[in-house]
Length: 124
Image 1: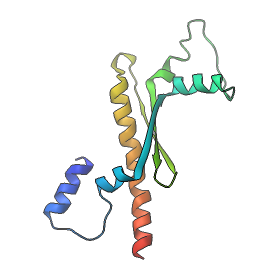
Image 2 (image 1 turned 120 degrees about the vertical axis):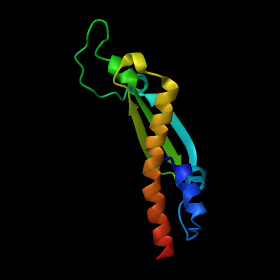
Image 3 (image 1 turned 90 degrees about the horizontal axis):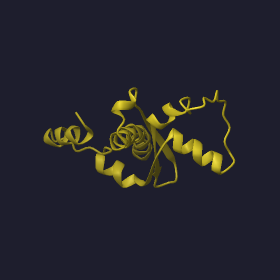
Image 4 (image 1 turned 45 degrees about the vertical axis):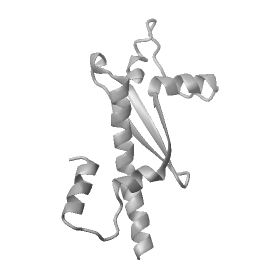
């Protein structure tokens, strides 16, 4: 089940006490950023902030895996950030759009407990 399906079931059961909803989660996200680990490495090299340990191969095959790891950074309304990631095991299956979707889903799952805690504090 996805978050929206669970929300529909909650509503169907008439459970109306204060809770965090998928709409609350989405409303709390003010920005999202996607990049691969290879993109991040390139950006850090360009910014001259790169720190790493590599065993360079002439054909850059040591860096190929970095292009298969997708990150999503969500910026929340209060400025807090959460990350999600998606790693593809087989290069033949890599799809940038699917990687971004999976990384975002993983990031959103980290927002739920944060907003749940904030709601519980408000209700206490």
